[in-house]
Length: 219
Image: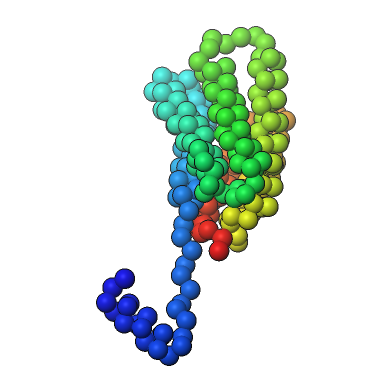
């Protein structure tokens, strides 16, 4: 405490006044988890735009750029879920006292990473095949698991008591957006509509990441 601040504290004490309330500190899950969701969203947005160009021409340079952006976003997002869950101990996670919420966030990160890697491998790393039904079933099942885990994590965040205000509802809102855009992208026959849905999802990730990054602990 500085000299001026100490003098002010003594004056308040002499007058019987209480010290002004201190602003709650920004927790580790907000700094690292929020930054991860934000950064991962930006990378995935750029990857989606590059993938649109790849649909027109499978140029090696574009494929390399897409690979870096897409796989980079996948790893950043997975790391962000670990930070949101509170790391190894879970003592400072967004789900607070909800152990189920923490486990759901960690499991979501693992399933999300698996789903993204499967999509990339089937779409860009392996030679084309005539029948993709098996891959569609696998990614569809992983997508359903992602939603269930996101929903469970959202309930844990809301009930965990670690965060309040807009940040408390940011991840649940992202869950709703992910469900809606995911269903549109999966069942539409229009490439333009599917792309728009995916872009909307990435923008939502960026917004939610920014909200989480600025969040404060609940006092």
